[in-house]
Image (cartoon, rainbow, N blue to C red; front, side, top):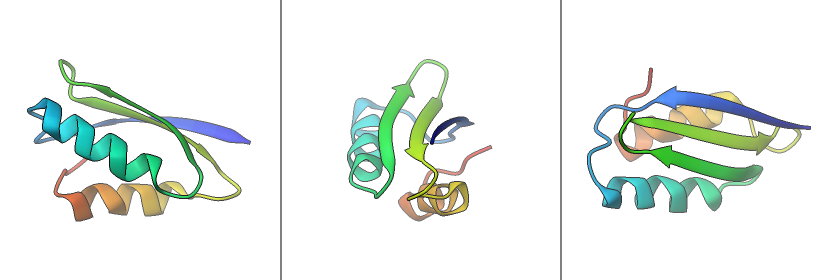
Length: 69
């Protein structure tokens, strides 16, 4: 089953940030879609819950240097 969650991401300031986030998460197991809305500083992640977990995805944002709310 696919789930989607939307996160407010701090430090999302450039197209390079968006590309970094998209590339990283699309390479993660279970992540099916990543949408970055630069103007709103929001990232939407769709993932297969049988493969990925929200906790690991949230931790990955911190690892990349993007605090989330």
